[in-house]
Image (cartoon, rainbow, N blue to C red; front, side, top):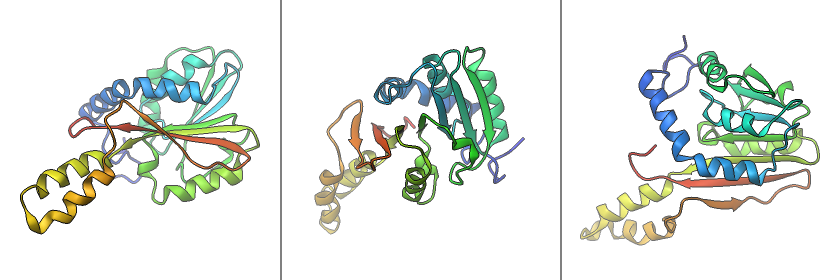
Length: 212
């Protein structure tokens, strides 16, 4: 079984505690996850490629949108997490195809995709903008692409603001922090300029310390 020290393992581990954390994350991201699926207009017969499926929390939601003829290609570098995902999704009219692969190294599993999406995966990819560029070059016209990413900036900015209060030597932090913080909201949609070949959306989730 892959471990945290295994390059094929999930960096945050595959223990029971890690599974509980990911289940909590799924509940926290529930509304935003459904909003992304709505935004991408996932249809029953779509071929959906999920990057970094983990133990299958988001996969379950995707499969609920798919029907007979639909396919979910769930890609993760961890065999252990893919086994958890297969167990988590249970029975479905759509086909569930787990693929062991590094999501940053796009492979033939991407071919024919109608939708490409991921949740809380891009921040695990070094130079994620390179991956986005590769997606632009690989997918066919009309492919819908979207990701959900936690917004880690707000809690860090709040911490910097508190640390700087009353300390003149840290005044630059206090000035910069409000520029980073966003108004409190369940989610914000930040469209990224898209090439003509596909639509690209990122829904950012504002998280507070201790919730992720």
